[in-house]
Image (cartoon, rainbow over all chains, first blue to last red; front, side, top):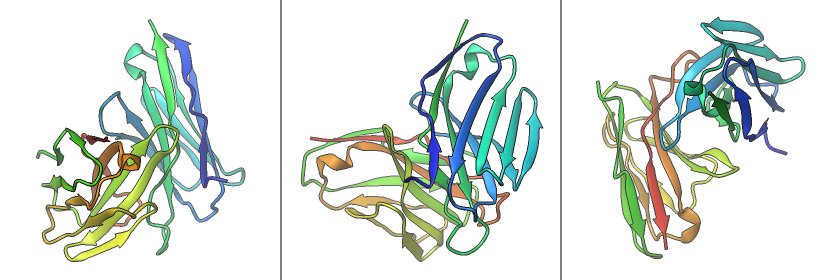
Length: 113
Length: 114
């Protein structure tokens, strides 16, 4: 079993829809949770990060972490065609041996105009 | 700031050839990493460095060497290329190991081994 599981999609939604992207993980030592956006043929760029459990909002994006369920989510409100990309979740711990990022496989999202 | 730069953007090798992928950053970051990205596999860590002169293996180090003689540069060497090393390679850097340190990625090198 992989440490981080992410549905690869693809996920196609109409413009304006609310998008929900999710990851599950198995290592309870993870404390930092990140979402990266990767456009085609580009490097990943950090979208949001969250420490421990809770929610974090940034414009149209909301990241949620539920450590009890080992489940993280990224919600995109009022999705736009420019949001079409692959979204990667990533996580890491805070102690020696867990500094390295562990990435999900990425979910490909297409927002249709 | 240029951020993280990688050269070349594309490369085709024959089996058994060697080459070096270049990575440089101008943010004075201590922590640098090399990843490979394959369909359905996500980003996998090859090697990383926590500072000049210090390197360590990641998840998939076989067939690759690294060195870190300066803070800015972190080249990745393929010793004897194999078709299984066909992939997209990303270099990344971050200031340190604090959880709030953002990891920045380069644009990637697309490598094909025939």
